[in-house]
Image 1 (cartoon, rainbow, N blue to C red):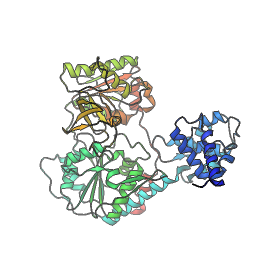
Image 2: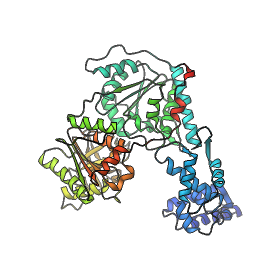
Image 3: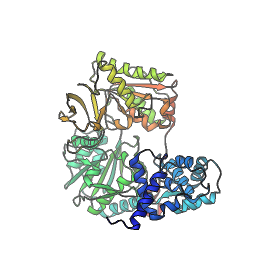
Image 4: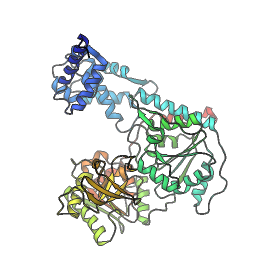
Amino acid sequence: MKRTKTNIKKGYDYIYVLNALEGIVESQEEKEAIAKAVYKEFKNKSSFLLPENPHILSCFGADFFAVEEKFKEASPFNPYRMIAVVKLAYKYIVSSGSTYALLPQLIRQCDRILPEPVPHFLLYQAISEYYEYDKENDSVTDSAIGMTERRIARNLKEIIAKVGVGTKITETDDHLDESQKEAVLSLSGEPVAILTGGPGTGKTSCVAKAIADGYDGNVVLIAPTGVASRRLSEATGRPDAGTIHRTFSLFPNIDGTYGHAKEIPTNSLVICDEASMLDIFLFDVILQCCRESSSRLLLIGDQDQLPSIREGNVFGDLIDCMRIPVCHLTQTHRSANPLIKENVQRIKDGNFNLVSGSGFRIENHLDQEKIAKRALGWMKKLVFKDGLSISDVKILCPVRQSKYTLSVETLNASAHRMFFPASQREYEVGEPVICLSNDYSLKVYNGDTGIVHEIVEDGVVVEMEDGRKVDFSGCMENISLSYAISIHKSQGSGYRVPIIILPTEAQNMLNRPLLYVAVSRGISGVVMLCDGAGSTLYDCIRTDPVRNTTLGELLRVKRKEGV
């Protein structure tokens, strides 16, 4: 490349930004990404602007407080500082999954972050520059989120009007219970429909299978995760279920939304399992594809489970909007323990008085090390004394990271030492493992589980749940031990006896849907180990998080629509 003055200046500005990030960002990769983003926005003005406006770095991903610490002499009223604090405050508020923040709430959060008071008109200016303001609700939202929710509502209404009600199934198999039969008869043929119910009610294996089998056309089976798509295939007897990402060939856009490169055949029936996991961006793509192909959509999920990780309360909003037919299945066929059924219902009702007894043990301990020992002790007893397989028993934790005493990583390491005290290796034959990401070449998916079958030179061979033996040599980062897994990872699975950990160190993550998911994984028994004389159990049941979203209001049937 010819060394022009422009190129020399570009190199200087880019390096200037990199140097400014020293002591703020540790990762070289992250430094380079921020520096490139800043240079792309400001070009050769970067080195001129940064000395007076250091919070430009915060606006492009650097830690706000680290920038504050390094550039203490910068003006407290700098407009980029105002933008940075507004972005940080908004991020705090919507991190729980909400799609908007109330304006007074956002201003209060800014005041909490800043060490000194600033005139609020400066914050209002920053908000107006970066966010959409809804005067009626006095709320602000990210423009990509606002546009996505409006597009979802528009596309959903168009599908309902355009596709219309089709051919209904009129006869059902005798092996279905009455509520399942009613669901098949009422939901078949609908342009958009919802099937909800607790674990073991036959949502997928009975109702979805019957509707799919009775559809005279192409059926597309999808789910948010690889393991959920595999189970959808198994439940329906159809081998072609896939993840939403793979089915539609999703690619991320710069604003956080998705584009898609694949279409589906015209007049298909799209069945999406584990729909409670859908965020607004995934659901947006599904609806776009259904609208473009004039396809029908059946959403299946448990409305009491954990919602999506990203923004939105899609499944709940759709159920409440009164625009879509919904069937609730209530008769469970999974748990053989009546106490599990009773306590699951009590958790759903917000009842603090769970029933402890045979097959449902609740223990309270004040010492976290004691909880860890009890969890491992229960696992050892259930496997060695009661004869359960290691796959039948699972420790369920709210947190994964090893910085916590009662985390997935910490308890997995302890269980490894307990079962194999002389081991010098990371894995031993017979240990349970879980896949951490999708690997289409190996045909394994995030959440798939198996048992170590053989130790080889560069890794391990794992016997998966379906009996296949998969060699993970060269990609060991894709698996981990699974004596313990996160409660989020356990969604969609069932265990003979789950051992549930409720630690105070994860108190900000404890809530009713989390506890509901953990307890409803149990088939024949549950062991619950609470920290702090039962206070963590109380915290779980009393905390029923609410997400602020606009989608429900956009969809809700108004009187003037004649309903």
